[in-house]
Length: 280
Length: 125
Image 1: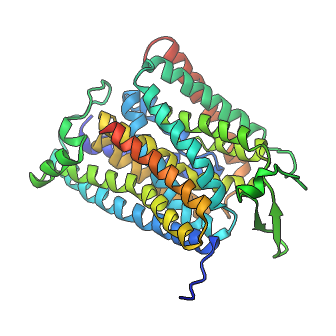
Image 2: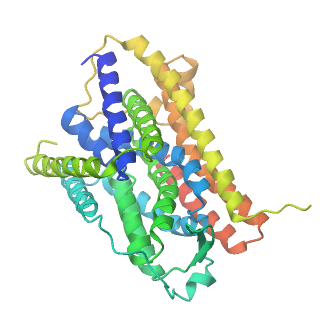
Image 3: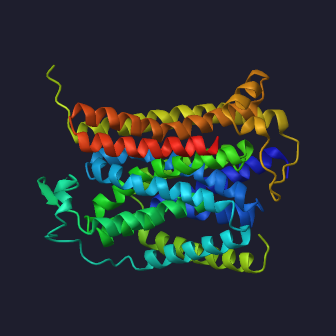
């Protein structure tokens, strides 16, 4: 395909991925690699490189808005970034050693997991009165967030080593597949460390950029980042996600979310099949 | 010096820093991208087979050589580098900010994250 239509189509596809990702809260990165590989027949390594770049752009671009709400915790983020960045380097190290078919299958499994998490949205109620680990105060991870009544709600952090280990896994997936792996980061903070949901999601977004930066340099140096592809993907996803964040308050998300979940599910199955049959 | 500096202020500045970095990087990528499409609009592209990018696009020194030759693709790649530098700048800022708060533990934590990021750049170079 000639450069001009290819660039425009990839931009449009990335824009849609960013928009839907922001509207549904699932992130656009997770559908980007399947979109590029299955629809545009891009080699999975180029797709991962471009996706990783777009992940840095969206997470950093959204950070200012998240920070204003006052939910994110810079300390929890910074502390857990030790684990995610080491994991990201490990993931990038693995990426050249794993055959692309296996990458496609792992990617498919992550998509199925994301769809399943999304299906389970009738979440358990938020954590109340978490006693927390004694290390929560020692490591200064305990904090407060604004409650709806205009006051401050204090929280403590539990099971720090378990959360830290899971964050290493989140970083590895991010470095291996070029995704933000926000779902795993939220799992580590919300489910394992019992950090309030809103604090978990905003802090996760804050961490994604630093995690991705740890493996992006490696990908760039290995020649996985093609400028002609990174250009429409990065700008498309960024524009889509910024627009999505603005529309979020007004849009009816429930139906959209179900549709997007189905798309993710289908892409996951397709990725696994393609990997299995060696078409990647 | 009566500087009141707390975590929420730090997060505000970090948010701004990230926003400015992304804006700058996007502007550079867009400029390079438009030039690239104009120069190659009729050429067919095929990304279906992986051939690692040419060496000039994979290192900073090679990039500046291409840039001097006026290659638009190098402009895009400089934007990508700016983007990767943005979260790293955030961590550098955290080191300074925690030092201003006299929080030694978190100066150490931020330095540890910075060290890992530097190792990733050195490892890749």
